[in-house]
View 1 (spheres, helix red, strand yellow):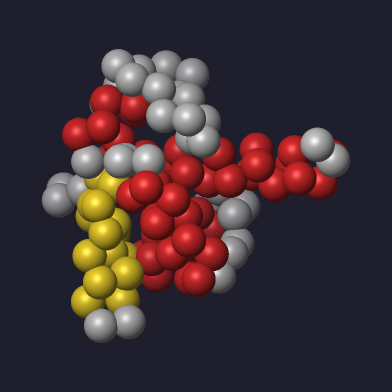
View 2 (spheres, one colour):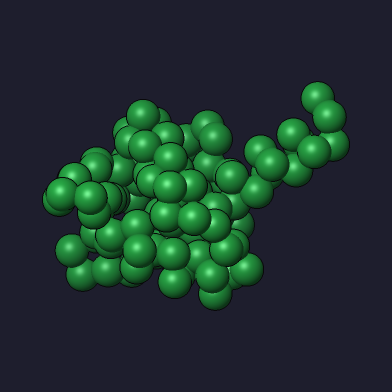
Length: 103
């Protein structure tokens, strides 16, 4: 594995953890890709809405979120499995593990 691909994978795993944390902070556990973009930017992750949508879809494939499409707006909602990952009850491959339980 090259250094570039290794960095890209670490970057994505960290971003996925931040996405799950961001969703868990919301009362209804859901955020549009546009609003998530602002949360990611606070952690120095400045990516396009398409990239965030790809990460939402990856998290959905992993069972960590469900996705709602409202026209061109993509909304992710954290699942119980995603909450369990944050609480260190389960481990989801492809997502960084929190250093301590978040919820």
